[in-house]
Image (tube, rainbow, N blue to C red; front, side, top):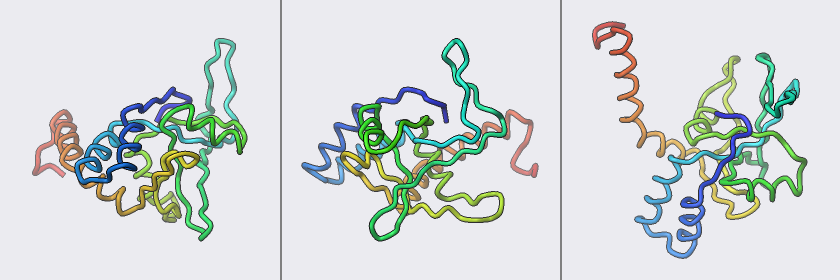
Length: 173
């Protein structure tokens, strides 16, 4: 998660268009593979607001609260938003107000969707919408869960590596 980091996903944008024309299993697999590689612009509200330093960098207070706005459908379902690039984000800004953003990965979104907050409250988001002002690709919770499952071997390797680096073995709890 990086603050106001430029994001560009030209291959993913091309695959979105290809899927519209031909939603074959091969194209869906290419889309998902590219989806998990990318970063996405996620508008955010920060309280207190960040302060810009004289050199143009933004300073965020360590106690800042983050709120990622949710897109609400006509039937009341809520979704996080992800934009593949600045041009897609600008479409959203045109009908909303300019906002700071974080560059999030699919894993970041999944963590927000599936984890509970400090009070045990579950997230109300039904998933993620990629480019809601353009292609409007909806990734429901079930698809997000499926994507995470495909990443499980990678996560298990990282855990094993961390355990080894910290001198832990399988019998060590």
